[in-house]
Image (cartoon, rainbow, N blue to C red; front, side, top):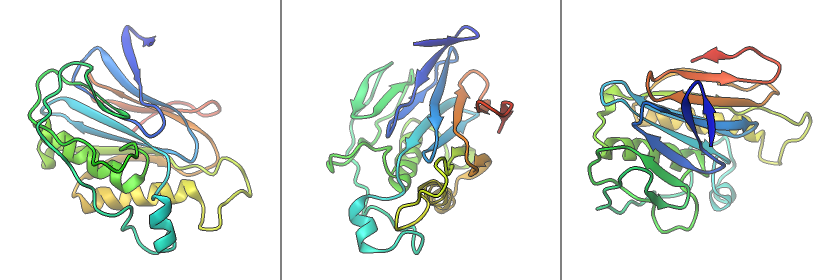
Length: 214
């Protein structure tokens, strides 16, 4: 586990979603190229969540309708309930919580996909999970980073994955009535995004650019 300035850095890997309320931790998604890191933060309850989005939609959704035409993605997102996690308990593939006190919260539906893999589903899950942890929608603030075109000239038939990831994430946050406090997307360079739980600060760093705060 990486330590930075005395903090434990909890890695949010590809297609994962993680949460924390531990002030000694930072959630971090490394090397975001076309992927998008989505951060949610509640300054009152002081709990944060992060998703590492891989694709805008599932393949089935992409086959049903061309990407970019609609942001109605991978079908209905179903939730179960009744889980009350403690520190570090795994809730399923790609989900981990470091929250000390929680309310019963939703768990992923049984579609077999990691909950952070697709943009729309990841945002909806992040929001639902934060509300389940006791946060209030009006307090939530989002930050997004990534969505780059890292290989020039390479674009699938249905469009630029990085740009589509960013579009889907942003439009779903708007639909969910979540304020977007900051974003750093696009371009052709990779990014690393961090959420510092002790302060709520979100930073984005790259190899060739200075670190910025969102």
